[in-house]
Image 1 (cartoon, rainbow, N blue to C red):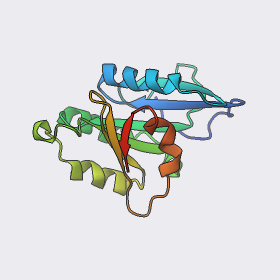
Image 2: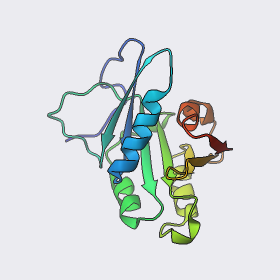
Image 3: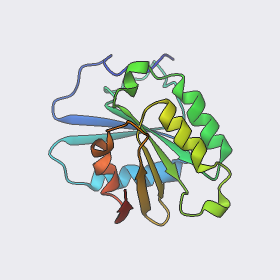
Image 4: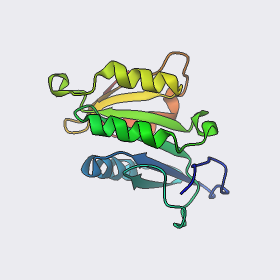
Length: 164
């Protein structure tokens, strides 16, 4: 097991690989399925992981984007993401990492405050999306000074009611 680096493998021709990292298997699979249904000019591959580091014995493609998924209803989910971040090379945070906070539609049930996730995204200067996958709503919350919003439009198109 090692640190995940953005340029440790050659890119595939007309291929983008997204890694979704989070503890909620069903939500990750739902998001992956929605992303794969989207029509795009390049081939999209989505891989799921509960946490990092990834096993080094497994052959895998180059990872082009990592989305860390935090369930606002679970402190374990936040802790898992925080621990996984230690296994990502610093150069990945130059536009190849984003955060997705799920469960934002039911704030009264949240055990993780939104500001906690906002501070996390700000610390890593990475975009943050708030959404509730169960009701198909989301909105973008970009960290100050972060101009990566357009890179995540494909993720947002999956949800019919998105707000910025």
